[in-house]
Image 1: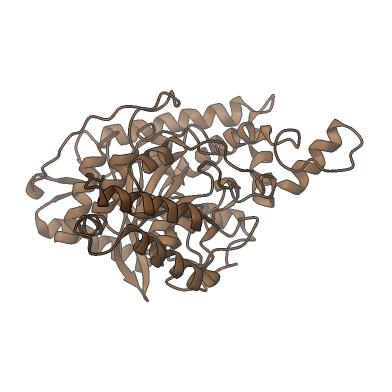
Image 2: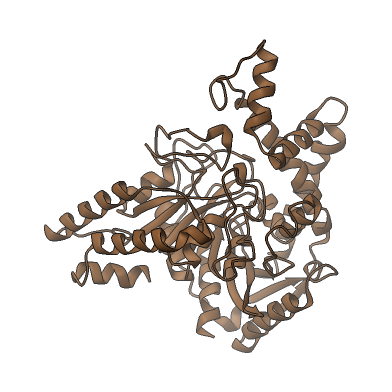
Length: 465
């Protein structure tokens, strides 16, 4: 889709301003019901589009993303636009600079239409934890779009933009991509700069693209990836071209991902997708990732501990609520954090603070980090015999709004199949592979560190087959 629009712009079949206007009108008309956007930047978007048209008129060669409308999750900074992270505590915060990924998109000429809704501070699996409003799934308005990047997924699925950026800590790009029937990539930890991403869990967070096709996902990833001097955890990635012979492809299927708890219909669709690869000539190998059962509890401890530390800065002094009649400094903290944070954020701060507290650090946080290492070793061992690992993205179909919001444990289980790749820092992509009662099911393809090109190629084979 991106390549086709790019060619049409070069041939002057339509202008960047015309395509930008078309998407803005569509958002204005239909997003009242879906509620995928928190902020629309009409004037900014039109001015960007006019610049692209002027460059084309001058005969300049334009990058492939020039004139392509996109949306940005509202925990990624876009200079001079609001960046709320879906929280009341940052309700009026205006970003003073661009995140590195946004800077790269702007340099590539992409048109930023606005900022999308999310679970507050990216904490949630349904986009029902936003402090402003709930986002609905465009496929079925009674169901959630997944989370926390539900606004970005809904915007792409509803055709409000060509691509969107989300952030993935434990599945927050892959799960909403699966629920909305689109493609979503969580890159290798460090493959994409986190500079300008409002932190949830710093050792897990990654920014990733959400698109309608695997090809588009690869194009966007190629623009945003790479080393950034502003992020010491980022890496330069060598451009490795993988030419896959399907007959040489070895696909691992971990038995631990097909256990009690996965909906039978979801399991059947995933197994059919795996059979499709087998019919094309790939070798399917059952593998074991024995520490999978400990991944979710380990993730919960690591993520909440890091969130507790990262969110300590929102104290009512520099950020958030501060216009209160207060008695003393403690009163400032209680009133700003008490009113500024939602229930899920408070819950995770409390869990994380407890895990890091004296007397519990070794019993919980340290043990969780040891489990994390074991999970990485499981994958390392598996990748000695297979090229990629196939699993479901979610154990369930998209669930109904309100169905799990009052039961945190049920909600956390939505990420049971995605957190392992996050803990191990591995790249993983969600691609649509079928439907059950018109609801999409996502197949997760996990690769070795920095093997994004390989998993893109494997994902493309699904459409060819």
